[in-house]
Amino acid sequence: MQNKQTPNSIVGRRMRERREALGLAQEKVGVAIGLDESSARARISRYELGVHEPPFATAKLLASVLDVPPPYMYCEEEDIADLLLALHKIPSKTRKQTIRTLIASLQRSSS
Image 1 (cartoon, rainbow, N blue to C red):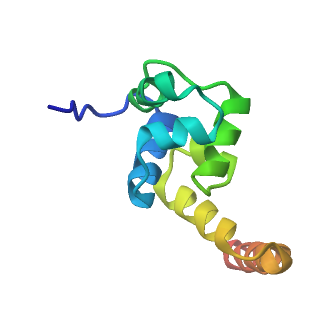
Image 2 (tube, rainbow, N blue to C red; image 1 turned 45 degrees about the vertical axis):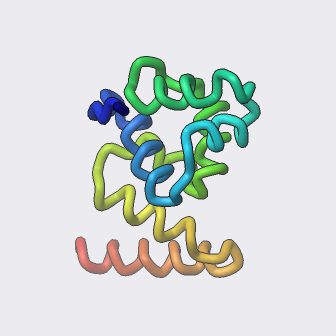
Image 3 (cartoon, rainbow, N blue to C red; image 1 turned 180 degrees about the vertical axis):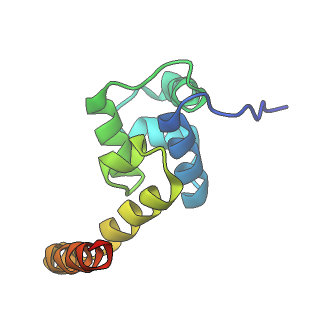
């Protein structure tokens, strides 16, 4: 029976939520970032549970595989994480303008 513990770190929680949303197995994620197939599942499990924190270079690889921006992995506030994910999904061609428009709107509303 699989242990469904709650992740102890924000990175672990974000990893697990996103991996499960994409329907990816821990082993597949681990292999995709270059881990040996024999240890991939265990390593990803340790990251997700917060037993170990992935180095930033590894977190960047994980973010790429999970199709999220690296800051999303470390974001503690859900609404800001949702915003980061939404911005990441916008084509890079239009992302800068979207961000500028959003910032201008936020600045107007806070004045």
